[in-house]
Amino acid sequence: QSVLTQPPSVSAAPGQKVTISCSGASSNIGTNYVSWYQQFPGTAPKLLIYDDDERPSGIPDRFSGSKSGTSATLGITGLHTGDEADYYCGTWDNTLSIYVFGTGTKVTVL
Amino acid sequence: QVQLQESGPGLVKPSQTLSLTCTVSSGSIRSGGFYWGWIRQHPGKGLEWIGHIYFSGNTYYSSSLKSRVTISVDTSKNQFSLNLTSVTAADTAMYYCARVKMATTNFFDYWGQGTLVTVSS
Image 1 (cartoon, chains in turn blue, red):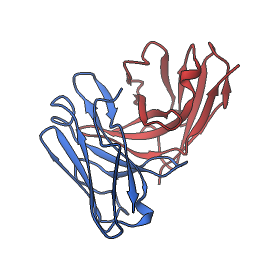
Image 2 (tube, helix red, strand yellow):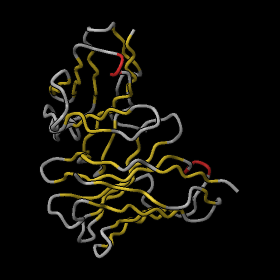
Image 3 (tube, chains in turn cyan, yellow):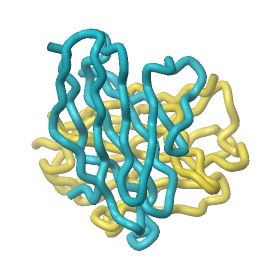
Image 4 (cartoon, chains in turn yellow, purple):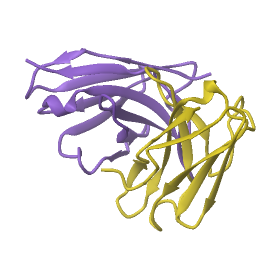
């Protein structure tokens, strides 16, 4: 069972924007940095955002991260079919002393 | 660029021990500020963290798996390993190893391609 809650799916038309929420608690998102991962079917997850809003080298600025209180958000602008994937948030939980992933969100381009 | 590669049996019998190794290349497992972790994903499900290890041997484990998991490191081989005892069908999953940036932050920046482990007699 995950302590970080994400919507099961989000969708939008090509070129539009989607946002994915990640809801947690003071012991995890409220205290620690959040990272986001992109996973295409049959492949390993890939780091998309770290430290709430930082992009690794090579990740386009269409992807953005933000955080407020105990929730984090991943935004994807200029959506295209290549963005169809599963997206996971993750962070450390101080109370449980474990790393926690979100429940995952499937992005569909209509 | 750091590369990680999982290896180990793809089929394990129930009640036996699942053993996987992750070989790190193009980087040292002794790099400061990085832990080395295992994550699994049940078929069609989300990501589940298993545990991290530092090259010194310091470990963190998932509370739900802690009684059955051991993660170890072999710095001479630039490898770290996962042992999961008393497996059942519920342990059938894709297992990934990854490098973990862990200091004031925690994130997985490099991942192996994953290895599918099936628990079945």
